[in-house]
Structures are given as structure tokens and as C-alpha cells.
Picture 1 (cartoon, rainbow, N blue to C red):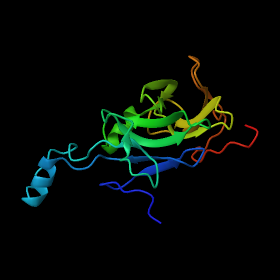
Picture 2: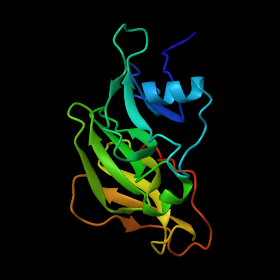
Picture 3: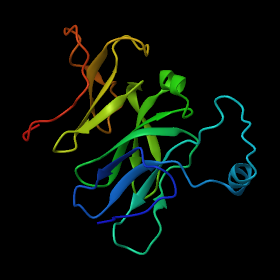
Length: 185
């Protein structure tokens, strides 16, 4: 069963907690100039500028309304996770879609209604996002030393606080890559 359509490939998605909406991560449709260049086989490009930043689109499967663009495309969205109350999304963003831009990635929380985004204190290089069941904490991975080519540690942030996220896995000598909360948090 087809749930939605988008003009470009979807790189990630997450269901809202109530199951009525999808947050999808994908680039916008091609601009007329890009379509013309494809049609005319004008394949020249400036290296690093050939990708479009991915946005977060809010989709209500089965509804006739078009997907709502939640982010403005100034940053490239890498991943997304709904809060348990469905009012916020945690996202990992980078300056551009280029792979090397992940060195400047950061974790943010976005209000689903307004689209207002705030950086997570200590969320530089943040990725692999997971909300606690009560929505009071957000777990994410990031390079333990603040540099992209190093071990990924587990960080937890108390949502809404100005306190920097805490590293919970600094004593491990292994990467943390899959995050799951127990039912009781």
C-alpha cells in the first residue's frame, strides 16, 4: 500500500507516536533549471554543489494535502526522531549534503508546529537520536573527543535544559551505534 509520494528518494523517516503522520527526510523536488539541464544533457557541475540539502517533510498518509516542509533547507537533515508527545522532532543536521560536512554536524530539536529549531547543548557531531519514553531525555551518539574520526560515545541530554549533554559511555573502548531505551527509561 502506497502511503505517500515524494518527487525524490527518501533517505529516512519516522512515524509519529500516534501513527497518524510520517516525518520523512528527503531533498525537495528538482527546480526548473535542474530539469532543463537534465533534459539538455548539460551535466557540468561544481564539485560539492551537485547535491540538494535534505529537508524534513511532515506527511499525513492518505490525506490529500501535500507534504509540509518543516525545515528551510539551509542545513542538510541527516536523521529524524519524533518525541513521545509528538510535538517535537530531534534532528541531526550538517551544513551541506556533502559527506565531509558531517564534521560540522549537530543535533537539534524542532517544534513540529512552528518549525523553530534549537541546538542541543553539547550536540555537536550528534547523530543516532533516541527519545526516552517520557520525552524528558534525548540520547544521541557523537565523537567522544569532538572530532568526527573517533569513537562514537553515548550522550544523554535533559530536554529543555541548558546543561550540556552527558557522556555515559566514556569508559567503553567501543563505538556506540544503535540506541534503544528500556520501557521505564
